[in-house]
Image 1 (tube, helix red, strand yellow):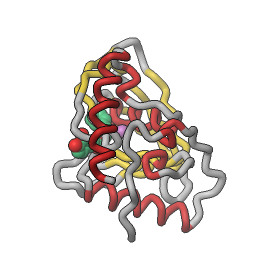
Image 2: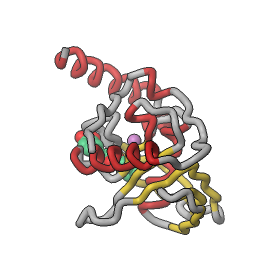
Image 3: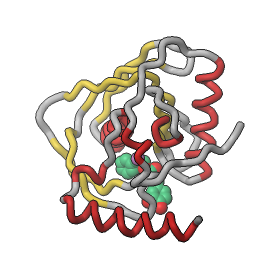
Image 4: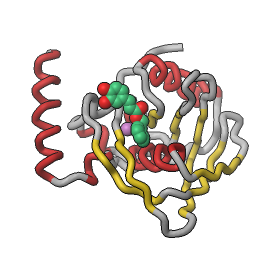
Length: 168
Ligand code: QAP
Ligand code: CO
């Protein structure tokens, strides 16, 4: 097991697009375990491979209070059901300290492969539905702050750039 470095906005590597995983190998399972460990240590509820500078379609998540339900999604796709939207305050391990309201479709079916390469589906109309859309956005190089006004995004960029410099 290993803790991975989480890229912080405005790191340009967060804009890279992830590629589908052709075969679920022991290396992919190891990466999923390391991402879960990194997410739990943060602590966070979701992490996409893009955030640890790996351009593969892999997402980990755990939405439970007890942190005892690790979820792994490989090559995830969502199917939007109906026309309902939900507003939720979102945060991101790559945009630490900032929480903003984002509107997204509220009812989805997720299609993905599990850690053993087996296809599965999950239907959800609450936090999982929102979180998987946030994480799939990462795989496409997109961040939740892209939904905000350019002015708000600029303010967040300035603050995080300053913090980044102080860490050098
Ligand atoms: C994505 O985010 C998410 O700012 C997962 O200082 C979050 O795990 C989707 C975190 C909310 C939908 C709703 C953020 C930790 C964790 C911070 C996270 C921070 C420390 C964020
Ligand atoms: Co995020």
